[in-house]
Image (cartoon, rainbow, N blue to C red; front, side, top):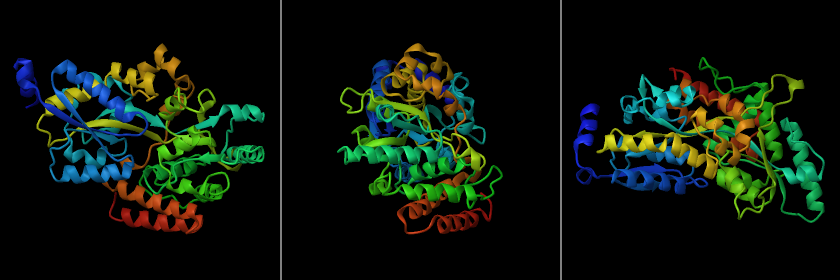
Length: 418
């Protein structure tokens, strides 16, 4: 079937085979514009046309939309941009790209290719990868003679000290730290980073629920203490872009976000241009047990719907957008991390994103969310984590009660196996 489709494409005149391919793209930062540019370049090369569909910024809302469209057999979208934790959830409605990918899989990080392979089927090709990182105001750290914090306790103290000093000097709108505190996938990611940095976990590799632990209680107690202290109360409604907006406007000392925010912070119109640094996220306190710098693995992939009427053309667009040239363009222009190791040796990529070299180990060893072990139930797992953690941060629950309830919910989900 695939070979015959490709043969048909090779033999059919260009004018006769022109089709329209629809692709869903995110709109965080420069995502949508970059997607349009890349898709247009492919369209000009092939004679086809592309319709770019903008989807919700919230990963949870986007997944719900995808599930609705795919379950209904919709042909409205040919190519879906999917989160790194969704292959197992959506695999049944996605095309096996393996037979059409050529040697491309061998040119990406093996771990991501494994992540995107479900029951022997390569259901998505890597678009860009991510790991959570710490953005900081380098100018303010220099002003007060303070180093980049290595632990969460150090970050909390440094943020509070600079916030207090700046407010006393008249900078009343400055906050110490912003992150993704809304009850959605982004909060699940932040919570896992806090917990993993102390040696804890949500679910272990065997599928056992281990979230109600001293490491998790310490992490949530710390984070709850930030709200209204070094983090604005509104952070409880922040996703990536709200956090970036406050930080980039010059109103925060530290920010947890994805690397895409670097290019925007360094933009010509950015109030903090030339004042920002990037480092690994803080670790737990080594004196109190296991501790490591923990950034959660992120990133997005491109998949072809099995309901598409133009599978061969859609797969060709996926290969183009995930190719070396396009990934390099996105990295140089907007700091999107390539999924091709070779590009981390590219002089132009490193010149545009010097932190790629120093944080490369963070990208290689990022902690994965428990999506593989929990399978199709991961979305329910993430929702439970986000809701309970949000309750602890907002004060509607205590960290101890939230973790006890979360453990109970996850154990109930896993009773008949993940």
